[in-house]
Length: 253
Length: 309
Image 1: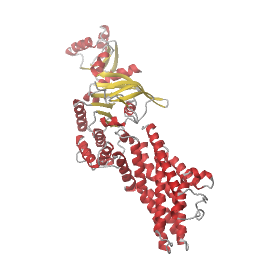
Image 2 (image 1 turned 90 degrees about the vertical axis):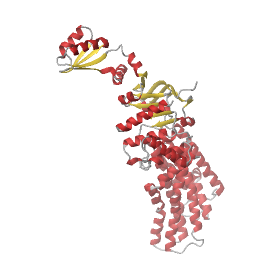
Image 3 (image 1 turned 90 degrees about the horizontal axis):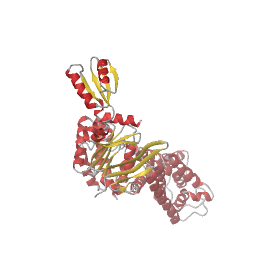
Image 4 (image 1 turned 180 degrees about the vertical axis):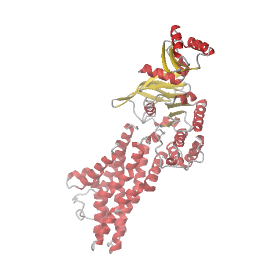
């Protein structure tokens, strides 16, 4: 549909062109920076360090901020300043621009996600021997989990951006507190957080055991990968549906 | 018979305790109609309600017979809207901005580019599509905003202060464009607070003040309604006091005010007789000039606002 494609292109142009991409790239380089600092001080187990950085740090820090940087500035430009009036007075249903923004934000976040997955591996491969499996497999697995996380977290950001002028505050709460913190708490509460399912995917796709990884809490009965994907897809669809409902009701002042 | 381009019934909107628009019932169909009122009178609120960007507290709006709402987006294929706020997409090039909106209207990328170029040409910005909006003057950005409203040659144009910031040549060009649109069978509703702009484009007005409808119709009809009301005439003369006394004695003036040493302001309920007498005084060389203050739209507007309190 042309309206979805038009907004997708607009978001990609805004978030990847000029300085729009810099905050996301800066966040994506944090794991690589820590990897360099740790490796500088002594010998390390490259694979273990990589997975520690890519797992807890990637899911708990890089992913939420990357999603916020990719999505929320678009809502600041379009909704909070009233520019979306140009969009909503076209013969397009209101879900179409939201879907375009979501797709654009996910695509705009992917290069930074790839950087977050690959840069620590590049740093560690420069200071020590590679893991027995090589780097391609863990890097691809981490990138895939971050990409899945982007789909979910960007959808949540679309919901918050369409719903509230204070989307950044709500996003900090929803993605960081509810996502990363609650998702990492031991106990049944973390089942309510999408990060529990991202962490489980991370374990499945990197092939590490349930309690092997420091930084992620043990999960004795992690959901299977198909269940994780189903839950994450459900959260994405629900968030986009609620975003559409919010966009129908919100006044454009 | 086809439905009118725009019809609203009992349209009201509150912003918390503040009333933005109160019980507006109007119909607009074909030709140019001005939505006239001072800043804060409810013009922009009305246009945002008409376009569905804000929801009414009461009442409803119909465009071409279809009720406006978030699910009735198809009607916007027949509507072009130019918001009052600045264009916002500052970092975009003019042609990219217009092409984006053309694609939202259903065009494929190549067709959207062609349409954007044609719209820029219509507003006198041919060849300027490569300029970023932030590098354009306010008047040029206004024309780009107008171009986006014209993209699909809509039947109904809703324009919020379209002439703001334009230079005189652009104003004339834009006014001519609006008249041509109307002459071709289209409808233009444009909001303005500048009275002489309105008079230059149309004689049909909707007067708003404090969110309420003051008057609606042709200017001459509105004037006629107020012909029996006191009218004001300013007279320039060297000796205003004897002239004021004579006019009061003859009951041609119902009130006088000495605005200056050589300026006399008269209030009358019999303007034709007063003008005859002032003409005689002019021929006798006792007055140097006169101006019927209420003759223009501004006078009517002042009268109406005064009446509205």
